[in-house]
Length: 367
Image 1: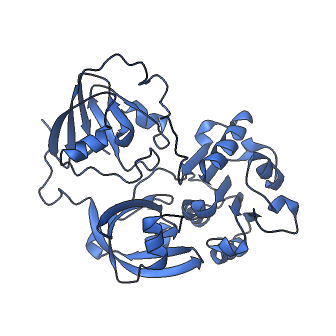
Image 2 (image 1 turned 30 degrees about the horizontal axis):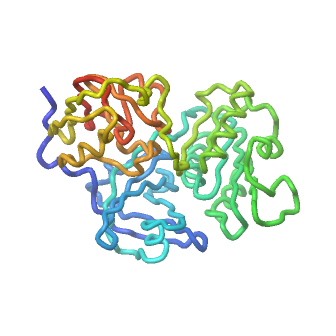
Image 3 (image 1 turned 90 degrees about the horizontal axis):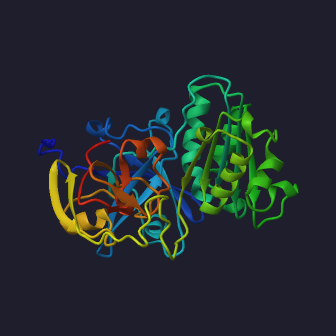
């Protein structure tokens, strides 16, 4: 027997939130603060580092995008940052046209890019590039406010000094907290110190860290382009840093001509061409359909059947479409968001999931 949710819950994944304040952070980025009604305060409680998924119609097209929160809970704000990207429909709208007072459809906070530090005296390394500073700033403020860390080091890369998002806030935090050190790395502007010029990679981090001992850090946070993240992450692993200490979040991933298949879940050469019978549970309602293992992903197939499935990036990055497999098995094309314990509990990214067995039941209502 499946859980039947109250009628007033169904379809309430998004709420209309009014834009309270917009601040121009750089020429091509803004921060957006939302007004949260009293009756929704609990819904929009969040952990530093989480993100919001926003749905909005522009020129007749429904767009969904995920943006990390840059505020921290103690500030009593719900605030994101948006940086305009070339060809970005929503980011261009947000930076150039969005005004205060407009209502946007906003999903509750999600994501697991956060700190586990609960005690004083921690050492934390934070590495960000461009708009990757957004969740890192939120996490940093939470650590600085709620614990007494011994050392927080931020290495932050941008094109030039005019494009440093939250420059004033970072300066204020560095002045306020003696344990905080911020290194700005600029790729297209000359600096007095060569160590602060160029792009962030493992070697640059070695130059700027207070010690070349990577194991001194209790947590390492990395956020930005995929190439930077993987370079630094792999270097830290060669230094025998425990994988549980390294936390990263992609803001985008390079488009691949061929899907990167999760090990052991190869589609190529799969001789099982029989259709699978898939049942999807969303908001207590069941949707059933047949699906080929090498056909549509489960998210798109469910959407075609009328299911109001949650999604945003559809690239295996944001985790918005996470669901739990209750019956059967699926394979994923790629996974940048789920942790090992998620996989052990049967969670998958439905935008990357294809059925492997004759019957599959997947539940979006389990968190």
